[in-house]
View 1 (tube, one colour):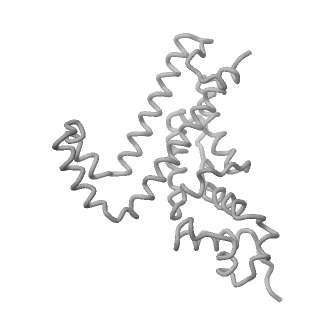
View 2 (spheres, one colour):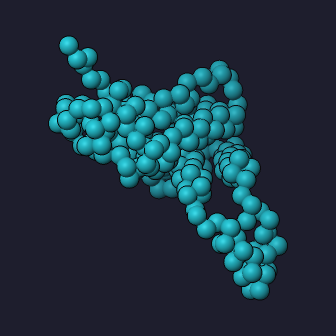
View 3 (cartoon, helix red, strand yellow):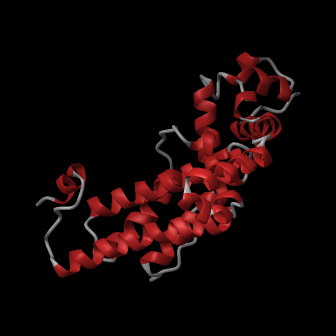
Length: 229
């Protein structure tokens, strides 16, 4: 008797396709072929390709924010979550593209958000600001990894680099001064630098809030509403 097919097996097969052919290569039909079954057999578990993509996105962050040390400073917690999130997205080809645009409610997704919001709230931030900062940080990680994962597919990077050097030297002096950073990307360094800038901005806001308690004038409207009495 054939063993019953489970969701995890289907998601694993989809990841195999993703790693081999990228996100464009993932479809219910191809996953069924990978498993040696007919496509209708998958519909019991996933009604559409988007439902499968949602499950893949959820699996990518299964290990994020599972071990946050008690009493850890908020900066360390946000840094930990950001790095774990990045690693989760990078675990598979096009992982960030899989995750971007998925809107799901799951333990994994809410745990990621809860860790960041809790860290900021316990540091004295209003929950509305904490949620806004957490979302912005998640968007930074997703956008960064999308660009990071796209780079290996850029076939003409060397030619573009030569064109950049010639054009910047002739017409764009500040780009020319920064040419070594702009043409030789170190993604680990860039990620850490961008993350540091975001954390510094959050810290600056918290310091201002401490100096002027009860003032939320520089919060977005939705966040101000969330912290209003």
